[in-house]
Every structure is written in structure tokens, then in C-alpha cells.
Length: 147
Image (cartoon, rainbow, N blue to C red; front, side):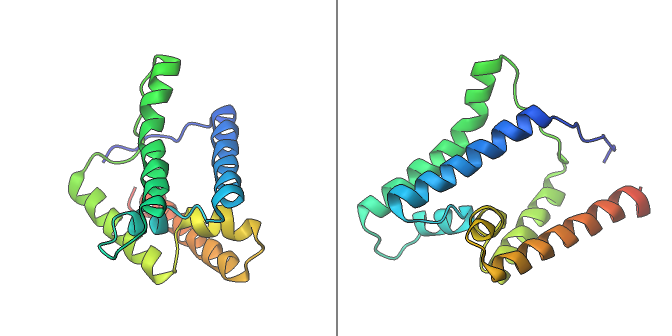
């Protein structure tokens, strides 16, 4: 996998972070729900009987996530660039590890990092510190040990 530097895009990060925060606040304000993507997706796809209204907002939320990249492309005229590996087996393994970690940690980075920290949850603080430590260690090993 060829190494490529990560672009520093403070304006895009600020706008994106603001939109994530705004959507999380609006979801909590109007529906009383946490914007944890793993939980939203898992309950949307659940085979257990879920009221239609509950399932509908979940699909709308997930649809908005999927529509974001094409909307950015339409707005800017440039496609959103993928900055991760295009090696399918590596990405499949990474996805499985993220899913396992989310199940083990009882939530994902959006649920714990955005919503949990905003609610001053000690459990979310521990989860986010664990996520960050694992991310730092992974980047260090991939960029400086394996090369």
C-alpha cells in the first residue's frame, strides 16, 4: 500500500464537525435519540418488530450519510477523495475489527465521542481514550514500524 500524507483541511474539518454536532443535537432535541451510527444502523436493520416511525427516521438518517458525498460532489464539482487503502481484504478485516470493537465497547466513535462526551459520560470518556490510543498506536506502527 503506497504511503500518502494526510491532507490538513481545517475549513472542511470545521464545517464537517459542525454539521455532525448539529445533526446530533437536532436528533436528541427532536427525537430524544443518540446519534450513534452503529446503534442507528443495527436497529434499522433489526429483524425484531420495530415501529415504522422508529425505523423510518433511522433509514432517513442513514440515507443522509450516504447522500453526503454525492451532494458534496454536486456542490463543489469535485468528487470526495478516498484516502484509505483500496485493498479489499484489508478493508474487510478493518471493518470486522471496527464492528467487533463497537460491540465490545457498547458503541462507536459517534455515539461515545460526539454524544457521550457531550453528555459528560465517564464510560464514553474511557471508550474515546481507548479509541484514540488504538488509533495512535496503529498509525505509528503502520507509518514508522512497518513503513
